Length: 280
Length: 89
Image (cartoon, rainbow over all chains, first blue to last red; front, side, top):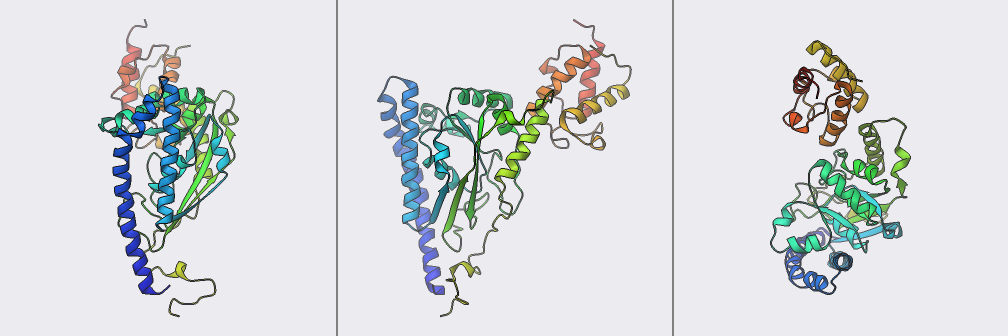
């Protein structure tokens, strides 16, 4: 690919990314006044409505991932997806990019999520979010209790132990909330490791700083592990939670995290195998 | 199973043992000025474990309100002193 082609491709991806952001915002609005209320009204049973809405979310997010792929913004691959479809599991994942949530939810017919409080104040989203059975990001113990309760009801729950997106190149900083939830609910923990190469839409990365090449999102779903295997006799919960969090860190930390690439100078990945330089 | 304390020093030493035991902290890091969250990585859920242990040690009922403004190790010692100086209920 010539330098001109690369520039053109990048300009295209900047436009496509902008479009996709607008699509997401407008789409959320439209769905909040059409699909979500329709699904809620389709049944009297709140729990049935919740399940239908969660499935609806999966379909919408799947469509969104495909849109990004077709527009050439990214590629993605999931390994072990079938493990996500067993109900009642605590899914813990690292959080390198804004897009990882979309990919994760697109793979799961039903999953509860913890959503930031601000969304409950949004006039369009506050009802859909509660009909979907999502959880508010409350403080400490209260959140652990709510999450543990939903797991015990047989729902799957998605948690990002870091609590926020990671910064590429920096080690993961995990909070212990996920471990406390796992222990309180006696849960089956499913670790999911996500890599975004090159890093895109990470913390502090604005949408228009599109990387040098389309990013590839890889999601590897591990084997489930029972939280109770971490219990030790007479051990204070605080210590167990610390040990469990340490384990989660080893599962979720990819180690060699790709560094953000400078689109102006980064050339290597455009080279075809055997090609020495971009000048043909 | 309640213990009685005579001085702040005693309380501090006992508290140090508790913190090392509960949270796997290094004893050197525990100084009276240490900030529970920023320096010792003791979060709100850990605090619950801490209260339960203090309750066992002092034999007094811990009112979470009493610990609402506790931020440093010194604050914890103050709170324990206040608790143990009151007649037990």
